[in-house]
Length: 91
Image (cartoon, rainbow, N blue to C red; front, top):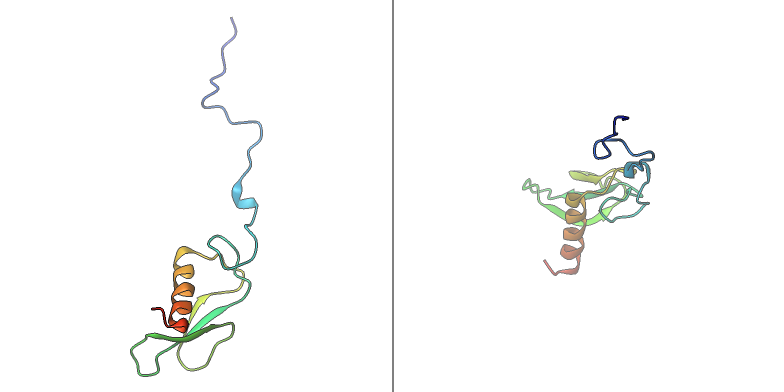
């Protein structure tokens, strides 16, 4: 009698690796950032973010939130959302 192949540990004939397919470009988590995102920091020395998110360094002290072509993470999305709420006066 022939030996039976263990199907539970066998590698499937075709495997699709999700990292080969980008989620596209945009500002949602998992997508590729379409441009740099900077936010100015308080000039008084507290380090608090101020002003809107901009695509080029605003001068003075600023923080790079995400670089163009990088993957948007949960933390990046939180910072972008916080900047929007600060601008609209919700936060």
